[in-house]
Length: 106
Image (cartoon, rainbow, N blue to C red; front, side):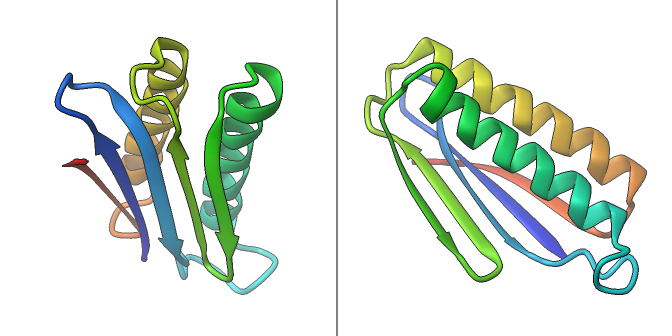
């Protein structure tokens, strides 16, 4: 299962996320669920750091990516992360039981 944890600050802004795991929807290289999540996460991380030039700590490991905004009051960062959160909610509906999405206080 893919676990998508989103972090929210005391002002109710999204300030980061941690995505881990595998969907197990299909064989390696053919798993459209994993590919959908991976593509959306990388698009978001690259849009935050490269297109909007928002400072963020990004760590990529085997089966894990973590992004945390350095400035947790960034309105643009909040909206970009909200877009990913919304997209993953839709994917979790489409691929039932393969993606778990949670929002946690920071």
